[in-house]
Image (cartoon, rainbow, N blue to C red; front, side, top):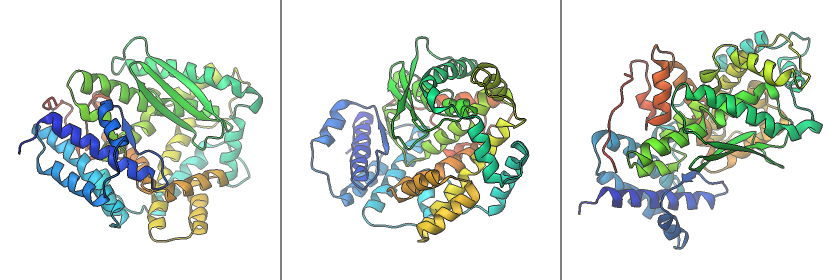
Length: 413
């Protein structure tokens, strides 16, 4: 029996909600960003969870018939294949990380050579102030020198607001943003994360920050990633362009262990550099934040430090592969400390993520998303490509240097 696009999208949403319910019951947080019809989420909330084998069957049924045009079929099929792979894992299948990355994230992922991290360490060594300590000690000293003092943490929301205004202004030069947008900042006591951007619908969003000491040299790096042109801008613009204008209701059902989030995290890690090329972020921070907080210049290169840190997200990706091999927590902690230069607290948080169902796979999205966009954005039509990232449904397979900048039209749902 032929299904209508609306029926198919309902079943797609129900499958994502049901899998997410199983994932939440498996010692992890939500892996679904859901803004779809309330009656669908209420239906799942009020039912008995179906057997995981039924979730695999439901995914297969969705793949049997996708009632849309070719480009939409290609994108939606990739998302359903990701959900099917997660459902199979919940049913007891234990595929190797590389196979999971291929099925869920749409990428070819493998353990990276440590030479990659040695190159990042050399970049850091040149970018940090000179000193006599180890590279890790010099990095921590640089972070402390730029940290907002605890007695001034109450100023952080205002500083974030200032950064939001500037990142939003620069993003609007790339793609028009709606007037009247409001982005709040909330500091969350005891939170383990550094930052999180939450698009709440309409013109409202919130950037959440943990209450631990905040490195002001990272202010634009974090705000651009979580806000503009990162997660909040992407969610806002795709809601308006894809959902409101084109009727793509699946955009309101975003399963995180899927190819679209590789691109989202890659965009987040590139966000600061997109709107503050070269040393512009450092110059803006010096003029508008650091001098006001009594933090002087030390000759460091913020842009090079942040690029090195992006490369070192690959260490976490390698740790996911090592964890799948059964390496002990001690081995993993030593590896993270040695190559990613993480503190004890950061190492503990990363190990917690590796233990959480699904998150060891999601960790791969950061480095591989960053690397994918690093080459794809290196093109004469860079601005047009950024607009595409913010307004189109793209897959990792779409992002290669020869990709043309024009848009493919899809059928409305």
